[in-house]
Length: 278
Image 1 (cartoon, rainbow, N blue to C red):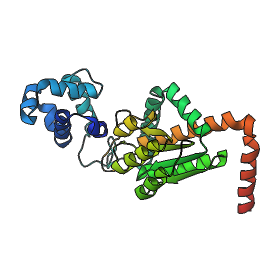
Image 2: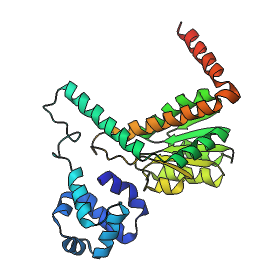
Image 3: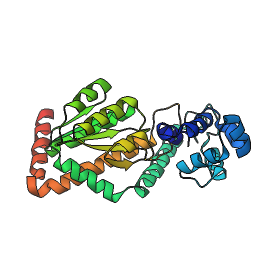
Image 4: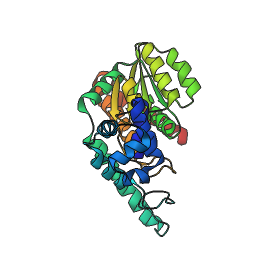
């Protein structure tokens, strides 16, 4: 819940931003407050708090408090929710795998077929594809480059904000940008995506649905996954990002197989790699 609030923070009104900032700083205190008490403490009206709850997709303050309480870690010193110091390595493995499966199922339920089709069509038409990401999402962008570079279209991945900023200014309407971000709130990433759009490139975002990046991009493939920790690198969202990029790559490969004999190209690439390791 807290990461979801962080992701929509740039899009909130001034009054709703005050509510978000208070909740992020005082989540446990928020749960104990009645709506009247909370409005006085923050200095906003009760309708503002209700609007904030509805922005999060909830029907009111009670639902918001319930969701917030359910999302709170059981122990503040835990690295990840549901994992304790007493867990064996095997049990930790089971819990992380179960968590990843649950997040992928959630991503599957929210997968938007028309948007996915638009993304595949845009990437098929693109004469150049650039992947942008920072931090952990930068690693995902680099992984995407490895998946896409064999498909016949020039492709590159940038995680340095200065580099993808400059590169975005050089793009044309024949190019496509795929921006990967868990929160969708990175100022540098948003700036580069806006520059790419200004130069006519099609922009695709793999990010939280209610984020600044989602608002900016032409096409959005949403990943609304609640992470278990603010102390450790995102795990659930990274898995979903990788799966969505796999989906795009395979869909493009299937679409191109007949027209470009992609199977033969991939075989030649694999033969070259086999020769390199022999």
